[in-house]
Amino acid sequence: MFAKSTFALEERHTAGVCMVKDIDAQAFLTASYDGFVRVWDMRKLSPRCIAQVRVGDQCWDFVLKDNGKDFTLAASCIYDAACLVNLTKEWNVIGKEKFEKHKSIVYGVDFFGDPKDKHIVTCSFYDKTLYTWTLNNCCSMII
Image (tube, rainbow, N blue to C red; front, side, top):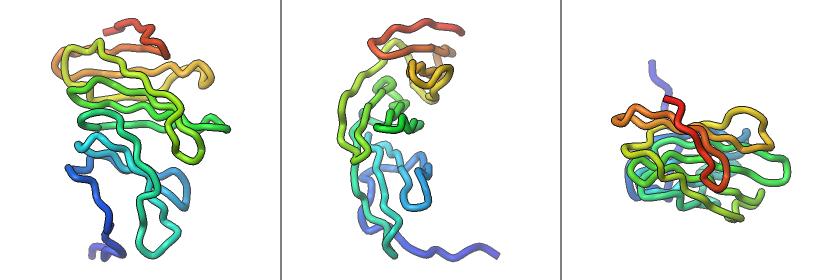
């Protein structure tokens, strides 16, 4: 037997939703082909969008890192590179940077190594590459 839906979102993305990740028991994030990552507040019977961050033309994957006093969001944006966004705890954008070395669709993104250094790894499908990079586009191709 399948579970029944408990709610439907009144506010929606304008294109297909590709990713959902929880932040804590009160909120979750969604990513969409509309290029936005949205923050949803679950404390009401019907969740509401409390913030949105434009990361590119289409967002396929993302990862959020809690740095204590702020957040860092890394997103793979298909044909529009990879994006790194620094956010306040209130979801305001502090800074944003794009990584555009991939020659094809950027499908995957994640953080690695020492958290304070903000090392990111991204991968691409058709050009079969994996890049490591940090802020200011310092990078190296490893595959």
